[in-house]
Image 1: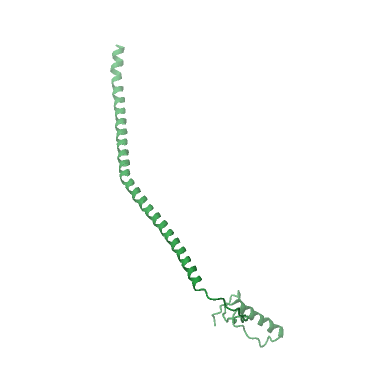
Image 2 (image 1 turned 30 degrees about the vertical axis):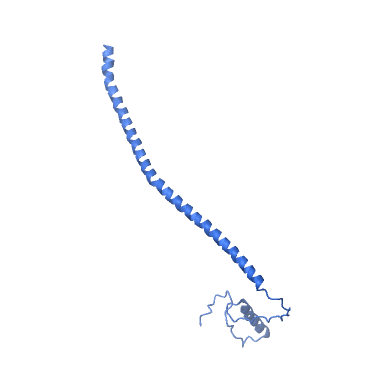
Amino acid sequence: FIVAQVIFSAMPVLFFFTCAFSALFALSCVFLLLSLFWTGLAVFVLVPVLVLTSTMALFTWGFGVASFSFSRSAYKAMQTVSTAADQQTRAPPRRETRLSPRAAPMATSSSSSPSLWDKIEDQDIKQEAEGSKGNQEKPAHPAPGSGVDALEP
């Protein structure tokens, strides 16, 4: 009796485990097939893109090397032509002439010139020192940093 009871009571448990494991096996197979599908699709798309971009990169790199080499050789050729032309057209040495010193450049009248601001400030100091405060004229430009707009009337 006990053997028959164990056999008949184990049947539903075995059916349950069989169903559960077969569902897990089926889901694992579906997961594996979907993963392989998307991996294959990615390989079929990404490998040609990788080959194309690598080819473009190699052509760009080759163009850069070729342009650099060409420009360097052209520069060297121009230097040799220039030095050869200088040697052929070299004039006989001239007598040394003495140059007179140049005059100092004229002062500018720009309102933004710092030297002009110094001159105006020096004039103000001289006028105050002479005591001519009553007849003192306003400077042409306001002092820097005074906050007065030079364009206001």
